[in-house]
Length: 496
Image (cartoon, rainbow, N blue to C red; front, side, top):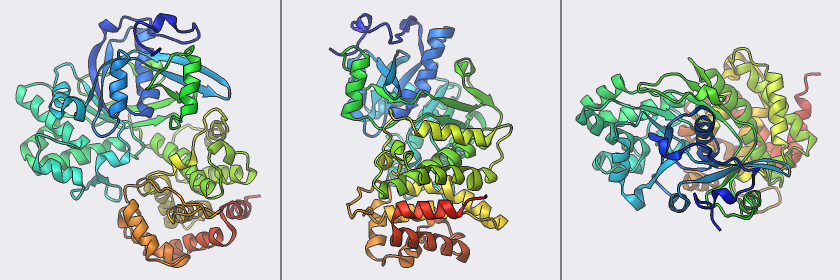
């Protein structure tokens, strides 16, 4: 039996179901990227607003590349899906009902997707397409004109494939029809994600139509956001657990996540917005301090644990938390090396660090270190390297950050400390493999990987102190293994 409108009444009373009239919802947001995080985060906020505050804001969900099965299954389930919060063995379920339409560019055609975005009621186009979906260069925070999708969109602008290209084409149609612009809201983990989105959209627009680019600059807003909720990749075991929560009912697009959720949003919308604050979101004038806090303290420590944990044989973050040295290293990384680089107002960073460690210990999550380790060439700049630049400018120490970078370098070498092959998942996978193949282990490997300008820029490879720090840390991992290297560096980093 599958989740559907017909089977909703058969769910356990412990599962929250839509108590509002779904027919009263209006499709006012088009979301690009119907992935796990969006299902567990932004759509839940909308569902709470509909259920508790009579909001009429509904979603049109879109997948541009991949995820055909998700969209197909969602349609088969009458646009319903479930979210389960995991905390050890205590799971709570909720059926989300705010999706009013679901589209896939390959199944429904890109014209249908753009048509949906050009409807008069659409006030917001939001995105969770991961860093690589923006087709941008992290070193410049602007568009990568050599990206295959961007090259395609420049040649065939009316049949775009990239997220920026689709947004521009929809805005072009709205402009020609005399319709107002919508706001474009990134919900991906990038510093100043609204600024990055604005950069890539306007840069691509200028390449095809200067007048259109000018109209976008003056009429479209690109609010930044900070999003936080740990959402592990789904496994057969977690899908089975969800089915158990639903009383044996199957949900092909069900999702499981931690109980915690946070959303900080720059209050800058040109065509209105939901009252997200009523569902617990924070609407602020400047998101950047919160973004930096989350990217550096949470995501930075997550990446540190992912690379060094995976190398040591820890498949899950909660297993890393069973190792006192990894706990000590993660906390010191957050408070002694990341926190001093932040400008977050009125936040107890010590309490924040302890809350993160408590979330990491959640044994119900089973958050794979391999999943967190994905796409490191896009993640390292904002999670570790920006902080390192602050330390270099100030002349302060950053041994754990250096160990984190070295851990990534060892990880992309493709072999863990037990000699097992690592399945590297990264947009620069082939380039990384080429560098590894053509460089010797040790300092030569470090210097070869530092040649990736899109990751390290020109400044870091030219900084002898930085190169030495990372090379020394790499040497520790090479000689002692990741587990002992973490113990050594965490111990030497004590303030006491």
